[in-house]
Image 1 (cartoon, helix red, strand yellow):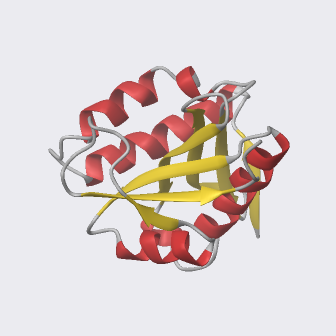
Image 2 (image 1 turned 120 degrees about the vertical axis):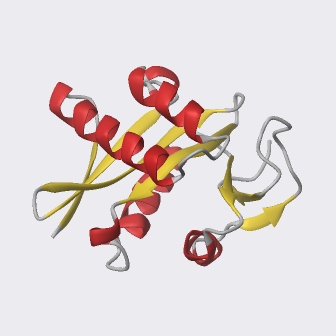
Length: 158
């Protein structure tokens, strides 16, 4: 059974930290891995409420994945740190994480959600498209050149 919770308790933050560090290690020396490690050490950091969230997925009670939401501005949020352990992939963990994040983003009055993912992460890109994200031009100049950017509108502007 998959359960999604906000990572607020110390043990949930520690489990999320472990997952983010595992993700960073899987990227080896990719330019983004250093920022992931820094994020992991400062949790909840930029993902703290009221405008941010940090989510932890558990599969049969064991930590299996995580994702974070942070504000870009007053109406746009950004998905960060999406990761699912290899042993928990292809069974709906990532979808459950994203569906919870998107539902909460609507309640938080975000109008737009954006994200960037590595070009090689084709399964993630397929999921984002299934969830209504569309590919957009680069919106962050500090991202790596092999990043594909996506956006999903949640609410009409105005």
